[in-house]
Image 1 (cartoon, rainbow, N blue to C red):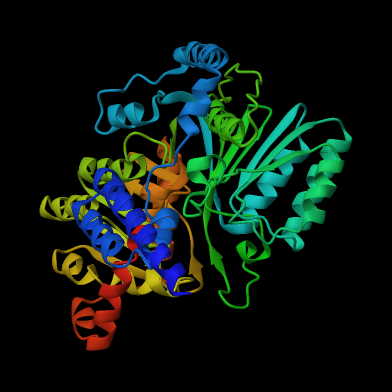
Image 2: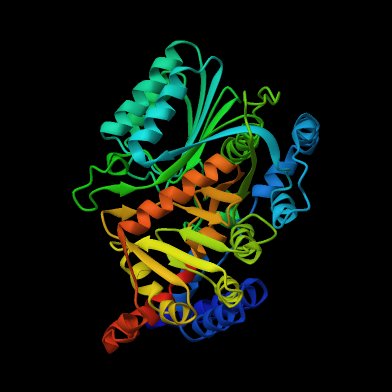
Length: 472
């Protein structure tokens, strides 16, 4: 035993030193690098496994897999850009527009219709109706799929369409949907549905990287109708959870050219999961009477830039009168915190809507690590009371709404594959404004004194919880 320990400890320390060099060169912040390096050198037996599971913030292989089929992928991208160009919006000089297009490497597109869908019943009634009307193909992607009442309804809808010869492609996240029974998956496969996990652990360098997730929720029907938002497939998302009660969430249905940007995001995720580059019709069709201008902005840990964080920063910094943000999790990084403070200093009305009841205790306590200073700066915080608030929505002035899957936290900023619809449309923006007002009326405003008067143990717990932000 002594001999084994004598062999094992030097190896552990060597791995710790190697990992420390990796952390030095790859960790996003100096604070994070110092923390990992100290731990890896001092306690390698514990820290080395933790680092290789939670330490990296870049997902390896997604981009290189895309370019492994460079010729066919290049032709596809050229085709898509050529098809979409006539539908490009003409207001690229407005605040925030150019940044969004640069981040997405896609243009804002005109001629769309955007329908706001509030909560689970509206959303899934709309999605299931869209599935039923499919003539050629259906693309579906969810972080979580449960085998419960809604999950069975969802599955039956797909089985019915598969029996009609409709091509169906379904992606799910293997960590988010780890409880999905094999029988559920096999029944869909046997019916001809191409169902696959996203396979985030694919590739030698990602084998142990269970910290990365595909958090996107997307449905596309025939390349002409699309849905995106915060809801997964499960009874709790219909408000049937005894623990959380009413579930507050938001989706948007899009018809028009922007649907092809949703389709492109799915095609690239499916390519990573299966090594298959799907090809569908890429003929954009303007929605009858469609006045919405939309950009679909995917983001994820394979991006060169921190796309989701930059998206939020730009939304905050471009606001002239107000920025309202709703998210179940509020753990901003320093750059986003600075953007919020700058907005408050410019007399922009900043309102943050978060749940009163959280599904994650670390997240709940983390928010208190810095809420007090934000309240002192004049930023308003509202805690939603009726149930669990899970929507990911923001409103900039009277001109732009963002609806998607990205939470206001480090996981969505850097670790998850997310997707957001950026919508410029008077009707949709007014609908989002009224939705926020209704939610504010069912919430209570936080008070700086209430935060300051929390007991000492609460404040310590808040700061300690915030230290786990990189993996939350």
